[in-house]
Image 1 (cartoon, one colour):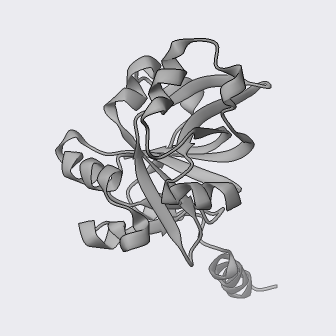
Image 2: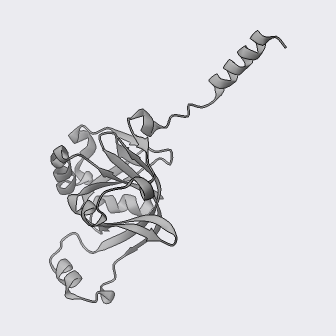
Image 3: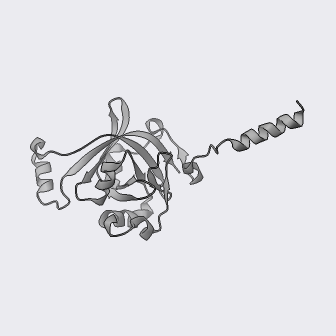
Length: 195
């Protein structure tokens, strides 16, 4: 076979291969290993407020979260998030196989405040803020403006059961909390990206 024919075949084969760059890389993110590259203080990280998103390409929603946990469970690297029963995002979380948790820069306190005080039932919060929704290869929504995105596959989900409250802390919390009792969602970290 002539050298030019081999070269033409190789070029043709390479052109037919799918682009190996992920959508996240196209949006300026680099893949990270959370066990090695996550340097934030786990006791402070959620306190600083993050965004939680769930849904699909047809419809999704995000909300600000200030509660969560980072660690390991069942031999898996995991994130735990909590969503109150009356929050619009709960509908998406209950149907979801995956969710994302995103960090935004300090300058984005306006985004966090808006996402935490407005309901997606009343309109598209991302569009109102000028955020651009993108999707992981699993179809999980995230915003291209985020600084870090962690994608999790839900391993466990259940609402808190008041009969198991062992102290007055949760009893007092829910006594006058209009959004209702939270559900816990434990997700295995399957992907993570940082700009």
